[in-house]
Image 1: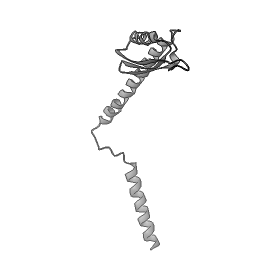
Image 2: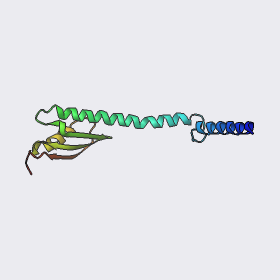
Image 3: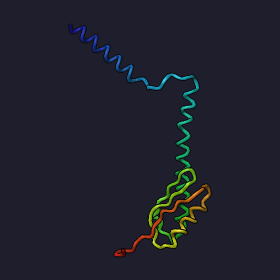
Image 4: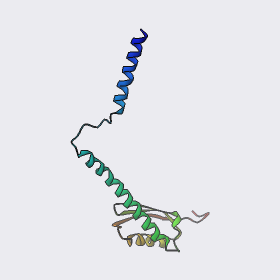
Length: 122
């Protein structure tokens, strides 16, 4: 009886290891894995380009000392830039948008900046 249990246990372990090691992807033609790998690399390149554009826009804003860029966030996606956060003066809302539009690679700017309320202000 012990031998039988040991044999069944070993068979179960062997079966579960085989099932666990499978990727779950259907078998495909040779070269299909290369296409899958290159297809998955494309979004990483897009994210990298978006991060680079975001940094370029933020750096352009920081160069203007009259603007407090610490309260501004920049989101970039495929050339479309969204500005969020606050500025200290109403005139800076448009200025920051113009700065962002002037960065190479920016195709559009969505400006969601607001004017920071002074302490105790309403």
